[in-house]
Image (cartoon, rainbow, N blue to C red; front, side, top):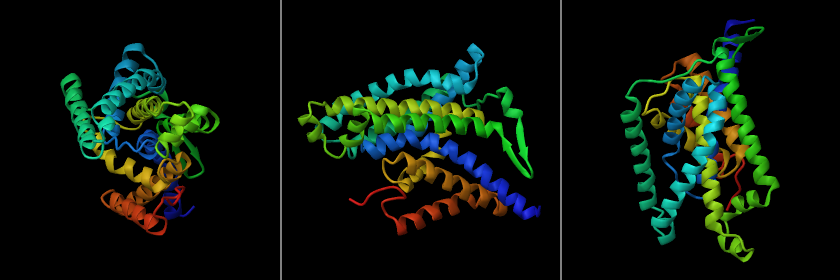
Length: 293
């Protein structure tokens, strides 16, 4: 096989696996930002906090980090419920969610980063499960399990969430709450309770994304800042609140970024990837799976 072709194919495969990580990181934001209209700028920081706790729990219990992430999804759900309760009481209920609410989530982000530094120090943390050193080779294409396993977990979590949103009354209420909360009240459904539950689910997804992250790469307290632009770009590019769009956009973003890095160097990859985002939005302002208002 031609060397450039092999490099291209490996770049595409690695980009798809990287897109799995981006999808895990952006899925929770697709719920809070896309469905609830809550600009949770602290979501990547919550993901990094999940990664640190996965390292702590995985090391203490001697379990796989991806399993630890699934277990931590429950306490992170409770954390998300608490954050939304505070946010609603002091900002959303009074109609101050636009600017003051955004400042609140900026504050949450910085508190998380400082808290991680104080608790764990500034050093990087990571976990190497046994499969992290295994690479499947199909012809000239390498498939590292370090990337494949987190991507599969992310797809499973997003798939379960999609089924919940499509097949249950509560899931349909989550999809509708930002569009017409008054209609939900007429159906004897409390929009605040629905938003509280949905925001808890979005933060639970951040814990799963954190587990995927620490398997793929080391994390440090400020790692969330690297993902802020990417997760919002994936969420917007896929179409606000569309989980299938989020997955497709994450795969496209990962492939464009990785192929560019393979051929032209990593310094070009963010510029080309975000340029691709602007091109897509120029053609489809509502995103890949979004609907025009």
